[in-house]
Length: 125
Image (cartoon, rainbow, N blue to C red):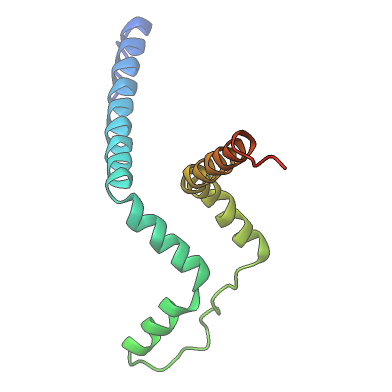
């Protein structure tokens, strides 16, 4: 690919073009991946959570679909540990906060309103 007659400047220029082309290709791949994730975020999230919460359901369904005898060389499915559940919970915390924040705000405003009304219109003894 590199000619022996190529000057160092020509070599740098060709390397720069090659790297720019590779960067453009990688950028297109990343954009395609991000658009797929954006379009299918709900499905991906639900399938990931269900796979973590119910890890053996897919393994059992695959085993019943294929009517081949079980091989003893297969590794048993890995069980999920406490750390796996914590990482899922940590990933879901921003979503849970986005859901809970309006509910907490509405509840707080209602409590403040009732407190103010009681203070303003309390019966004198």
